[in-house]
Length: 141
Image (tube, rainbow, N blue to C red; front, side, top):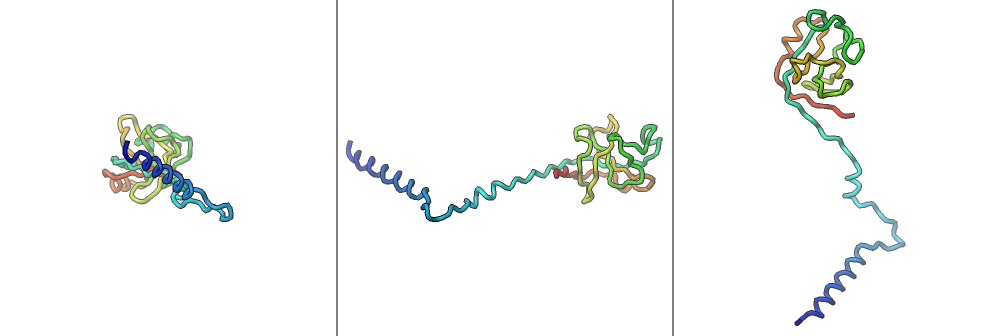
């Protein structure tokens, strides 16, 4: 048991020094730890979906019998900030497609579950201009 007492004394000295290092003096106000301060700022993660984006016109031949009423019950005719989203997203979710923000206020057809469908209102060339595979960002506010 050679050096056993030295090990015990070394361990005790280390514990005392560690306790002294962590105890602040009562005369100094305690300052927040910068690491803990940065952990208090909670930022929601960015979520991206690779999806096929198409466009649709608010006409009865491309929608149901009420083309101006979205699945959320809102009036969508004349608006350029509405997108039909797949069922996995809640109505009212904000998404960003090619740098522009849209609100999910309509639903895509069952046969197009993985698509996002931008409301082009009466612009007949818009559906051809927006159709492509792209990255869709979910915006959490």
